[in-house]
Length: 369
Ligand code: SAM
Image (cartoon, rainbow, N blue to C red; front, side, top):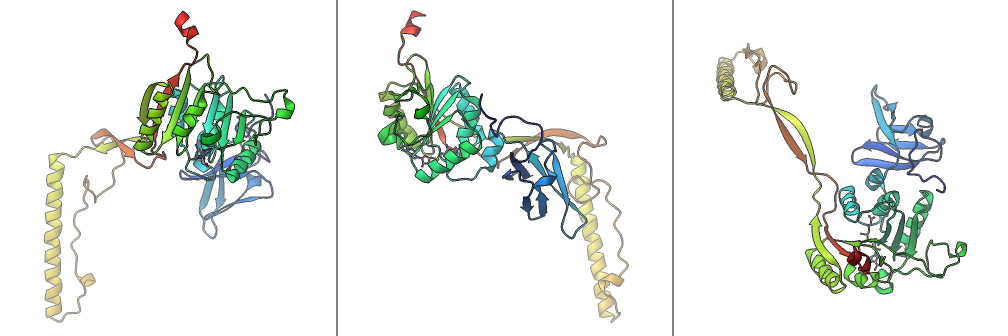
């Protein structure tokens, strides 16, 4: 194992750490902890020095400007999941509901050698880097390539090789002289032995890259591929090529991420409904009476605005399950409750189709078994 990665587990926030500041569920910001720096929010500024020495996960509070209130943030340790929610977007990205499923289907583990194209914003690359043995990631856009190169270096992702390449025209082989992070000077080889056993293609035209996989995939084990495409026409085209190239067990899946919230709802009886209608009627009649009194006063030229009229106070509604009235705490044992679920629709997930396929090039081992 080499130097610490920014994603390795640690307990305490220290100077120079990459930390993720949780402001709210959809506002998480990466910072590099610097004792001289401030983290600014619209509620006020938090000094990084107030974070140093505290355990990860700590809440940092400040008094809000001008008011006697507190505002707070949480300082989180980076994980692939939180990084995906906070990273600087340079492209569309793959979110956790998709990447966790894909890694499981491709049987990713510490002995996996994975090909990924294109790198994009590096969202999936971080998840792969945490789990697999080695990741070979390809990106043809030169600025995105440079940004990812710097980011992976800053985060200490040592098991990632990044190569600048159009994989659809030039394939996946990495040779000396290519624009790549692979350090040929350190090794006495001229070409990288990739032997990939898992492939993830997030490209507009995966069908152009699929035929070029044969020269880099492992021959003596089962290899899985996943194509991530937003349109069914792309799925169709990829499947045609996968079949032509000898990939088997082709299956298409779509992930629909949903968060279910469990809560209790008050049981409303017929008597409650009748009581509610009586209440509406009573209030209506009282209103008519009050208005009549007011008009009479105006006609008699008496100085009577609405306020001076002796407004009859309706008896305080004790319990009204349909709205107004006293508030009842969820689960109050004096009432009857039923367990319900509520779906939160706003989970972040990019709805693309996932096409999986598998291939065993050299079947001799399988035939002998
Ligand atoms: N999976 C990435 C993530 O989670 O951040 C996002 C990938 S983004 C949608 C697609 C990337 O593929 C873009 O950055 C694009 O420049 C790159 N790309 C498109 N065609 C390519 C090709 N033929 N060779 C290499 N990279 C390509």
